[in-house]
Length: 434
Image 1 (spheres, rainbow, N blue to C red):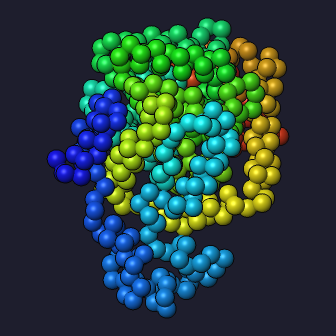
Image 2: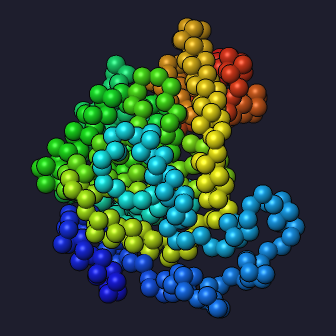
Image 3: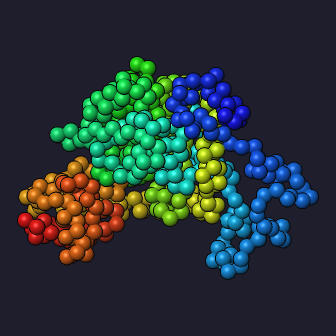
């Protein structure tokens, strides 16, 4: 083991040994090297005559660039676009995102957590968590309505065993008891549980109520108190898109500093929150379970995360970080974001209005939805995949089949005035097949 990795592990042993136990074998061996990047950072501060450290080309006191590119980006200083960004992300962006999190998540106020580390969007954050905390055979607890990429990221790549529980009760609420039962089973069998809380949920478009959220947190605390180490991941990809009665903040704030055996991790990003999918700018934030500030644990986790970033992608794109900084600083940002939120909310409510008309009751029911981008139909008489292909071939309408009965509809990309026609076509497709 590299001495730097051992040094970080010793910090965890001294300040929260449960977190060390949560790390995968790879996670225990991770470290941030004192190599080119560290030496270049020192030179940036002190090399006032010549700086011959980092592998970029310079001219005229700044980064070298092609004018045909800069012409398209002339509003930005070349130094904020072309050089490598720091491995943990631009400090200004990390600070602005932290301020944003505190503003939008009151339960995080007064809690101790790391500065957000910039990732190459949220999927990259999931990959970092998998590398740091998942060993082959570890149990990952998820609802049965889940984003399929979790299977690839955690199962195929890291060897996790995905343990699914029913998403909804018969009456339509979030099935907290099923979650609790699966969590207890894993706690007793493994002594370590990885819990992934994805709200608003993809594919269902559901966010729990405040009472359901509190019950999920209480269940996690209960198994921690009984001696189970819990890595509690909040996948907040669709954060902020809460349209009806639900939680209006991440569960990360309630899980942070809750119990020494609970490590809370928040994954979020500008990707969907700021409608910049192609920018690929996300964040990973850690909070250990100690009531009082535990800086050594956070330092160790940050350096290990930076180590895996350095090993896999070196650092995240610089231009998109600069663009997000400009957006967050813009005086028009909040008003423009609210305008787009209202458009999305209108599409969600229109979808529910159309579905509640009774016109389609012979063909399907639908799962609860109150947030995010999606909702799911539960088909009564036809196979979802057959319907999907039929809709595509005959009507030029695309949807996603997630199970034999479930068809996911992304109302996020359908104009409100077209939603009625969309479901009329889907209904006609069902009639064609029956």
